[in-house]
Image (cartoon, rainbow, N blue to C red; front, side, top):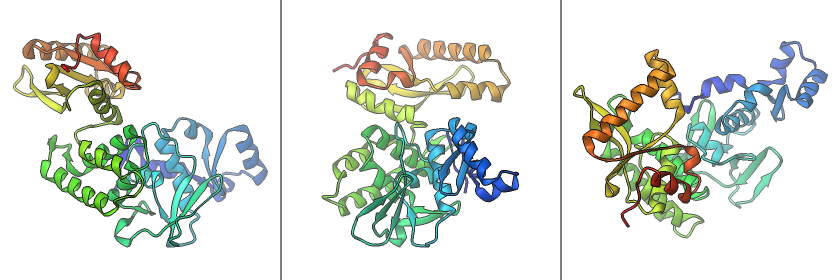
Length: 334
């Protein structure tokens, strides 16, 4: 099993985590290791785990945290320890939108609920049911459903939706056929509702219910997930996602958002998407820009709808996205 999230390959991330033995094989003494850490050419992520400084600074927050999880996992001395919360999220390859964990989170059976934390690890004294645990890449962690359940109760609503959308996409989206399996999505939501009902009265349950109903696995990236949140906050009805629009050659263009109540289209501008198109097609950025312009002109002309494009900077607040849409003469009908 091999998850890749926004360019993060878990196996490759594991290879970046170095222990003292590896560094000594490379000819570094303990004094040299200490000097490298002090100088920033090595980053110490756990008691005996290091990452090359450039690999650390160039990593996504999710990849940084996964490095820390891998470092802690290498020193586990108990089979009862399970990685939980944000630390299980990165093992599953799910996003942590605008979330930067300060510690690796593990659970150990005790049942008193206490948390013992040092600078690097937070140990939660709770028992995780056996059916809620699994192993990924040699890392014992909570299952996908349990991980999502824990996170959607504790993260911000934006981050919770991004996490739930990504999990549901894993369950219900077929990338090969670009098909969304509604029955699979419905089964997953029913199972998550059951978890919520069984934990009635627990912290964050009200938000968990909202997130489960709002989740949609057609959202491809956190940018699209949070865009959905902002659109509803502004006053738009829930948009359709990945909407097929007939192209000139008998196929379909896929548009990120169909804002049907405003008779408009929306596209979240993930710059990596267009870079990947250029690489795959062997085209220059100018070629890709021209092709995208022609695509958008066709969509506007054949549907009679305006099309707005926005990026991460436009979804930080509802007001920012509303202003961006207003520039394209798009506003909610109510």
